[in-house]
Amino acid sequence: MNPCFVTTSFSPSQQNSGISNALYLLIKYLHGKKGLQSTVFAPVQNWGKKNDDCDYASIRRFSTAKFLNYDISFSVKKIIEKENNIRKFDFVHSYHYGFFPATAGYNFSTKHKLPHFFTTAFHPPSSGFKKSLMSFYNNTQGKRILSGSSNVFPFNKNEKKQLSAYSEGKYKIVPCPVNDEIFYPRKTKFSKPTVTYIGTLLPWKGPQIAVEIFNKIHTERKDVNFKIIGTGPLENELRLKANKNTEIICGPSAEKVSGILSKSDVVVCPTKYESFGSAIAEAMMCGTPVVSTKVGAVPETIGPGGILVDYGNWSGMKKSVEILLNDTLLRKKTSQRAIKHANNYKYKKVCSKIYESYRSHVNDL
View: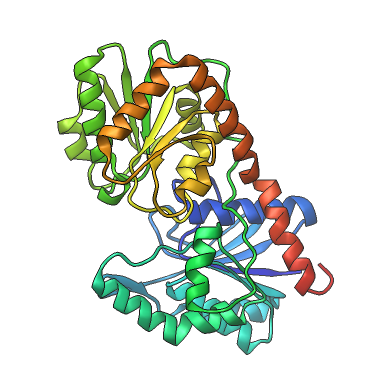
């Protein structure tokens, strides 16, 4: 049995990428359950510049070119066909609605009459220009991928609702998996109350907002420490603006991230939008309450494991952080609810749902 995966991002290890981790955990599960070695087609990236082979995956990289600030590839189709001549794929699973690798995967599956599965990880366009591009994509590619796939896997109800407006499809909600072998509660906490931001250091993720909130709390309480975890273009700006009790940690290992999240008292995510929110789910799996925004799928991801505020209500976010810091009993109860809710994201539980979909459409699996 030879699975074929086509995606926008992949590393055969835990990385700071929700899409990459979702696929990594799935092929890890397939290898552990059935001994399957998957083939993954992904763009050349900083963490993967060459073809690679490991016990559970053969990774084939394709080059990309820029068009209107978007990546396109003229080689991915030929690379998939070439590899199929060697392996004879039994099904195709593509990732990320709105991006060309999914189109390449779907076109290949249609040509060879193979079952096609689709994890959408959909982010709605934010600007008028991007909305026009998405409309063009949807009318020329998206509708037929959604309607023609054996199963479409949105991460949550919010994503399914948005995609259903584009096209009918065989939707099956499957949350993004989280690696519970790395992210889990520890018994110890930091010696001082600690509030942590985790996420890519990009404006729409809100690390600059987190720093402003941290600075305001710092003016009132010198006993609280703050941590910023992530990588991105705002790093230098954040270092200049952060107070002396704030530590900025760029590029730590997943194990170190997990330790920090577990030992923190509160995690803050002032995000503008999330199709799921992997960092939020990881924090909850570590038993740490999250304060975030009522946007996208964040309310579904957090459930009862944190506090939500309207986007832009940063005074309300600061107050929510302080409430959790000051109320030990509330913080403990919210932590327990976070752990219970995050059980839904344990990777073997999530990946088993995808595997059952494969079994329904693929012979001899």
